[in-house]
Image (cartoon, rainbow, N blue to C red; front, side, top):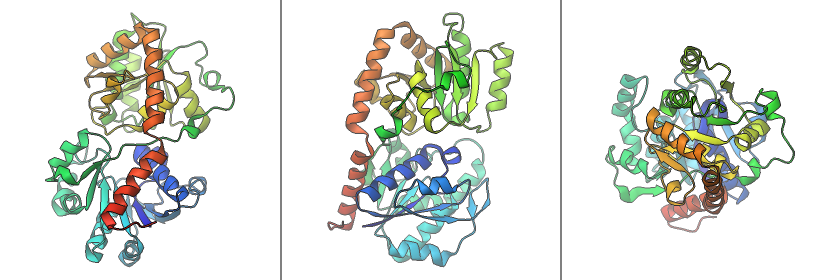
Length: 380
């Protein structure tokens, strides 16, 4: 089987969880003997990133507009990639590269699936452009897909708003490779980031409104009287909110309690999860955030909003689900921090749940079963 995975961004800093899903899914497919090509742009794509792909071919188009990820391209070359593929997998929604692959797939009558990654609702800036994109091609891309991938239950409703029949939607969540989060030796993370002896609450993600870091910061400010020993650590690239968050922190006179570490990868990222007392995912809108799995496999308890599409963690007593508001997040954190034993039990339950259900081997097997059913034959 030859699979063409399409994602405009492959860099983990700019691409976030979508890029991580494409990378991990492609690597696992290659391990299982699938011929995989990733079509992307070269935006922030480094040689070291390419080297880690382990048998996956990467076709990177030169990016000539960083804001809209507009690539320099040859439609003939894109059409050739599509022609050679058995299945095409589109990731995200608001990208020119998805549109070009869609047109090629339509012309060649090639089946494709799409995972928008929670991007279908029009949220944030560029609302006029997004509406125009949907009018010109976006809705056609969604409507004409052979199958639709929901990373979480809340994406079913998002697909329905685009006129998609739920019978064409398959629930295939994010995955995790437990080996990626093992620490072979003790990290000096706390010393390096001046966190020695300081218990802390962790945020991992872009500092962007959709991820809700401002909700978490306000909740933390309101909690400082009751939980004065705790610090708040923001890990992730700036998505336009860092200056405002830092201003709010100064106004609350909490510069010594709130830490902005920027993007972390490798050992530092692993250590941040392991050292944190609690991970909070305050998203206003999300589709099963991969950070929940990363925290889970690291043995860290979580509080997350009911907009994350991962409410089942509460059913297995593996986390606390709260409304997407500063007040709701504050109550969730209070509940978690007031009962250390319950928090540890939740962390243990979540780790087992993630290990049993969300390894990339399990997730990729779901994809390959879907692909073979679509093709109507046992393609290896």
